[in-house]
Amino acid sequence: AEASAPALDVRDVSIAFGGMKAVDAMSLVVEAGELLGLIGPNGAGKSTLFNLVAGVLRPDAGTVRLAGHDVGREDASRRIGRGLARTFQIPRPFGGMSVLENMLVAPGGQVGEGLLANFLRSREVARQERQAVERARELLEFLQLSKLAGEDARILSGGQRKLLELGRALMSEPQVLLLDEPAAGVNPALLDFIIERIAEINRSGITVLLIEHNMEMVARLCPRVMVMAAGRRLAEGRTEEITRDPRVVEAYLGG
Ligand code: ADP
Ligand code: MG
Image (tube, helix red, strand yellow):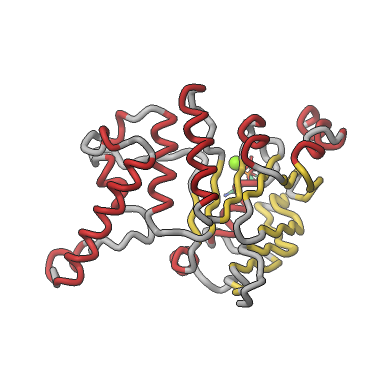
């Protein structure tokens, strides 16, 4: 990986489900430090593209590079180890577990689990656990969830679930963060706060690729957007120009 390599470089990636091309020769580059918007009508293939980047799905063709490394043969956990994290469009916090405990089962978290935790409680494991708890508490503070740390995660509102989902993704100290509709189901009172936190995350140096339907959020956060429709790149450019592009307006109205 060269220092100048983009944080994320997706080239000609395709995947079909039962003959239907959900992602069709899609390419996308996110430069290090950028906050790029990814928009498009429902069914455009945006979430599927995230699954391909995260390593949850394997493409039929094309390459995915993280900081210059071709990660095509690496599974999802290896990609987390390379600094990639993602949130899901529909967060499903673990019920019967507290908000803090949910933070600690974040993928890529360093907490010793199962047999390791039970039988090999070495100092190193204990130290890592303390560090993970400390980081989780800091992130809950950052996301204004501290007061709810001990509550069952099921009591969280839609917006608070989105914040917890964001916190869980941040546990692995990512360099590249994929956010799938962080504003969906969020009440207006919390929307400003989520926008501000995403801006702060990006200012801290984390590269962000943001799928979002809320155009206020996209306009406020993303200088540049990529538009997908029917699995393909429809348009790309400065947000204020792209959102006025007749092809883009048509894709939404016609989609
Ligand atoms: P978006 O996130 O842009 O709304 P998706 O990526 O979720 O779109 O879906 C793109 C298309 O792929 C849709 O037609 C969807 O039904 C289909 N699709 C997504 N995931 C699967 C899957 N695992 N199996 C079959 N079809 C899928
Ligand atoms: Mg989606």
